[in-house]
Length: 225
Image 1 (tube, rainbow, N blue to C red):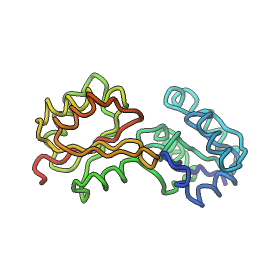
Image 2 (image 1 turned 60 degrees about the horizontal axis):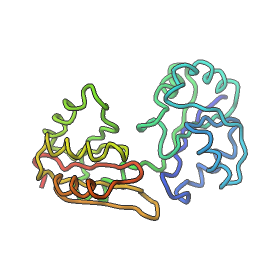
Image 3 (image 1 turned 90 degrees about the horizontal axis):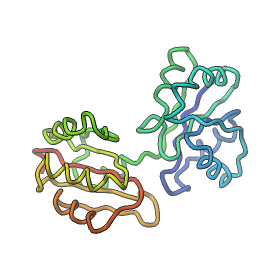
């Protein structure tokens, strides 16, 4: 019976892929990849050779029906993103939903996702939190930031390096310069970095230290101390 496996891939350190993840990749008939070049590097490091099909944000609507047909025609298909767990701010939701609607078996393996180590090591409360992912670039962005500013739970955002300074400026604008913030970058890599402090302090740091790599921004809840 056809089955789709959701396999999380390392967010930096290749040792973070699980033994089960390696086995499923080895046993798969087809791999759906966000960027085939990135996935080929991972597979080469694991000495795995499999057919790979491109499946990413820009083509998932267009090729969804064709991909479903391929899944049905194979016993085991794997979906991976470039790093982390597919569907979490990465392509995957549409495909998973369609498989469920068509009664295709779907299994998601546990594994790497950037938001968990980021909030755990932020030093902020992580018993309850809100994950916002990437904010809209324009429409609705300010409204979302204002809502986050009123949130009592810890909030987590993803942000690209070239938009980090702008996002931190907006946090200062909508939440105040004293709101506690933590920026986590390069998670699990050699130059992993956590910067903790007030929104003003973190904003000023990255104004003079332009970041590389995507960042996770953790914002302390409004009334949490």
